[in-house]
Length: 223
Image (tube, rainbow, N blue to C red; front, side):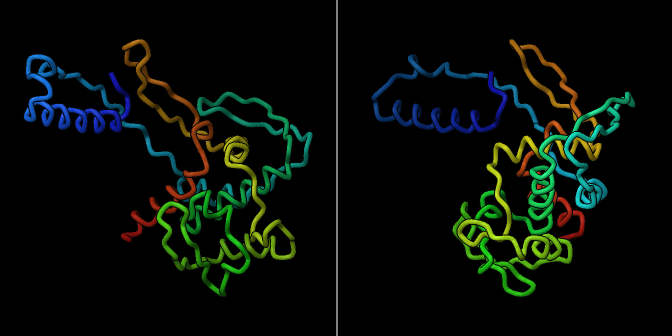
């Protein structure tokens, strides 16, 4: 039993190889012909922010350390959360929003240099495809760059950089503070049993949701 389509793809490749082995006489149909596993495929929900959630996050002013913030669960129960690492939360919000406004992956955003910025465009050689791409900057992306223009970062980077793992943790926290808490239900299999797991959206948001958010906006706009 597999929960991800990638395993089914690997199995199909293996089956092709085994059939080739039979044709070449390296194996017999009797030995391997009954290899017919059944797969349980689970469609994972695509996590991205709505336009309203993204703008709320962008405009959110992170409270000072030690501030007690009153929040609500998606079921309406109120609770308090104490703010820690306000500076890191502030930077995380900016970097995530920049990805959502420009379509950049975390890896490309983290390597963006000041020399890659030219007027209304940034020029990025993507780590995944090695393509040199011009990306238009909208007004909100420009505001984020303007905020850090007088800051000096290692290697002439344009933005503050937090490790991907830490940024994922901070992103969940700042989204919780913004009450990005729409219930998201995922189907999981535990010990062969199908279960539904419902969590607030902020628990599932990661850095790649910034790029997904941009893509969903583009698709909904007819691009």
